[in-house]
Every structure is written in structure tokens, then in C-alpha cells.
Image 1 (cartoon, rainbow, N blue to C red):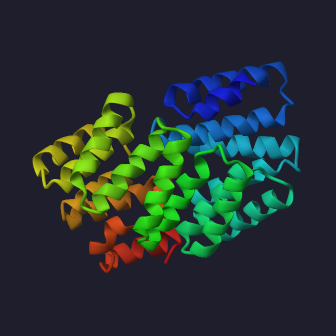
Image 2: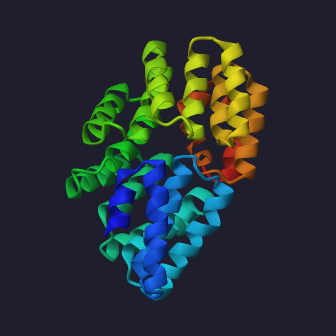
Amino acid sequence: MQGEYQYNLRTPQSVEKAVQLFNQAIAADPSFARAYLAIGYAELALSSLTVETNAEARPRVRAAAQKAIELDPNLGEAHGLLALVECMWEWNWPQAEAEFQRALELGASSETRTRYGWALAAHGRFNEAHRQTRVAAEEDPLSETPPFDEFFAFNFERDVTGEKKALHQMLQISPNFFGGHALGVVAAVQQQDCVTAHAEADWLEKTYPTIPGTQSTRAFAAACSNDKTQALSLLKRMATMHAPFYQAAITYALLHDKENAIDQLRRSADAHEGQIIYLKYDPFFDEIRADPRYVDLEKRVGVF
């Protein structure tokens, strides 16, 4: 269907178009469980692209997952979507893992499997994360999502070779994939390759100028080059565009501003941003990880 085609393009405009098409499908058939499921995943994608805030997406995604399960209790992907809500926004890992496993038992698609792998990586279960994302890649070799999700396992393990492999795979599949280029900035900054970081951030600015996450990558690149003036200017722009607090925290951490980094992480936790579950292993915060306030945040989010 046209909605699935638009969703799979994974651009802000195409995903927003997909939501419209899925809503039309529901208007035509209110008992169509998969249309609710599709809306939930599309809303989740808009949140990941930073087009929508977590406050906007969170209730919509949960409602869509619950409605899909109400209409079809054996729809595995709906249980997988609910698992993401429990993992990312409710920090209820035991319930999330139970939903992931139920989803796979019901024959959920590769997208559910790879997201389970991503969640396992955030909880330090790297071997299992690699296994799930690689099985997902075998099931759907034309999807950029499995290498995107496996990147996080490599990143949290500090495996630079693995990161490069994952980046190559996702951009080979989808050369204009926002997530691939954004993670290219992440990898380059962490490796102090500021030239590549700026090149990727500039490409994002030309290609996706309205996405808040684009400004975040530009701020990361500026901090990489020790351009504090530019980084602070971009932080102000990020705030006006409602970019995630977590990404502001990364920028402050790169500027060695511990107080503001921790303050932004607190705000991220208050907003229940999805990225906050990276706290335990995110290399960006190695410099401040031992701070008692950081440890308290880990405990609060449930990743201690």
C-alpha cells in the first residue's frame, strides 16, 4: 500500500504522508488493526527524526499499539511496538522484554527483531544484540534498520571497526538515510575526525535543514573543532526547534561543561526522551560518568 511505501522512504515528509494515508485506511475500515500499527510506527519514526517531541509521540504510539492489540491480540508487531513504548518511555525493561519475546513468538517481522536488538544493546547485552540485529538483516537485507540498530551495540562496546561496517551497510542500502549520516557525525566526533564530522553535518544541513537533529549534528561538529561560540549558538537554535535535551547534553559534554550536561540530562529524563536509556554506555558521557548525579540518573532510568 502507498502508506507503507511512504513510510519506508524514511524522510520526514514521506513519514508524515504515510500517517495521512494510514488514517485514511482507518477511516475506510476502523477494524483494520495493521493500520493502527502502521500509524504507531510512523509516529515513532517522526519522534526518532526529532520532527515530533516525545511528549507528542508517546501517547499516540501507545494508543496505536494498544488499539492494534485490542483488534488483533495475535498481531506480533503490535506487541513489539508496545515493547518499545515500555522500554524507551516507561523504562520498564522487564515488561518490554516480555512484550518483545511475545512478539517474536507470534511471528513478528524483522523490524521488531532488530528493535529488540537495539534495546538489548542499551541494556549492555551486546552479544544478544548483535545476534538479533543480524538475524533481522538476513530476514530483510534491503532494510537499513538492522545495521542502524547494530551500530549502537558497536558504539557502546567502543568497537570502531564495527561502527564503520554498520555505517557502510546502512548507507549502501539507503544513501540519503538521515540516521546513517547522523550516526556518521557521532562516530566521527568520537574518533576526533572533525573534518568528516563537519562534512556529514553540512550534508544534513543541505538535505534536511528543518529537522532539529540536523542542528544537533552541527553542534557536535562545532564542539569537535573546539568552536565554542558556534556550538553555543547552535544550542540556542536547537532549543527553539525543540531538539532533544539529550542531544544538548552531548554538546555540553563535548564542551567539557559538566554542569550544563547533567542539567540537560535531567531535563531529558523529566521528558522521558527515548535516548536517555543510552546513559549507561554512551561514550559521549565517559568524562562525567563517575559523577554521583550521573549515577543517580542511571538509577532513575533503570539502567544502573
